[in-house]
Image (cartoon, rainbow, N blue to C red; front, side):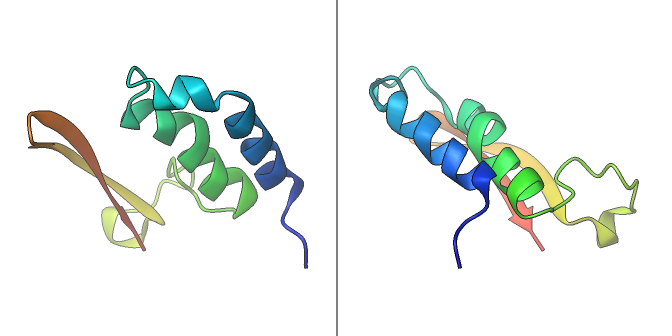
Length: 80
């Protein structure tokens, strides 16, 4: 079974721009928006943005607040 085309496109884009992502200027929020959300939403069909308007208990993904670790903010996300 091969991966969906959307996953191949994400991998190819990541490979093309690898130096940028390793530079330290590319942050976790950017990675989530550019790669993680499209992976779950487009490739796997998860309702990352809650377009169905479900109540909190029924959402596919619940976005949580950022936390500070070692002087840097980290985003927390819960996947159900």
